[in-house]
Length: 359
Image 1 (cartoon, helix red, strand yellow):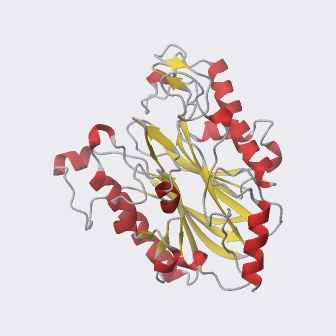
Image 2 (cartoon, one colour):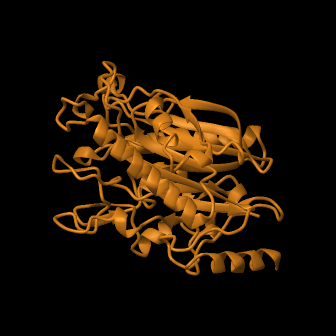
């Protein structure tokens, strides 16, 4: 009965849409989300990274003015989500960032200073030079330790199409794992940006990434019984693709999730027509925030995944008019930074997504 009343209150606080027209109003709720920042590069040449197009004399003419506009735009989105929810994210995973410097510049933006975000970041061996990272509020998340999980072909059960030589050459962004506490409860947070779909390839590599996450999460759940696990990222796959539904084992329906398993809040939303990005007029939700059974079916009085709309959704795709391209060839798509080589002064080619947990 208590849980039912909480769900009713949450439904009242939200406007009933998956685009988060409403917001959080109670102090016992925490927002956990993900945002692909679409090539947030600084303006300095790093010989170890493929950043040539994001330099002042590069093809994108990536000047300090453009860089500062990008920082301001991303900060505006994060601050708007905080306004909508009544509080800044407790945890925000990000991808497509060049280094720690760009995150330090981002969290220093006037719109975000009051959040006092801390950063967890490791340099990855990705050929494009982009990494994943996690921002967190130290007043709500107690950081304990973290790991950078590299892609390894050793011991995999996934059938890999690459030759041994291709495997040795392959480089991608590592997966970030951060362990800590929210409201004195154990959490393991995974942030990923799984391999690209360029050329229609990489399905086996994305399954490998999902396998790495699942195996590590299983060890964490064994080592820390009852730990609540959140897996987030740009998966470059939809919830119904093999990497997510079979290898990671994230289910569409809460009732199908078994102990030790995972629930994907964004699968049913995708079925209902929501999307976080579009390609050739087909919408996908690559940007997912997935939870384990311990967070889905939490014990009474502990943190649990909350419904966030009258439609029964557990996830939010944050879509606002200013984040949408209004004219031209890509009308209706996310309003991105560059289009056909032209600086658009947009935000990202992905919409951010998030979940809410609370008691």
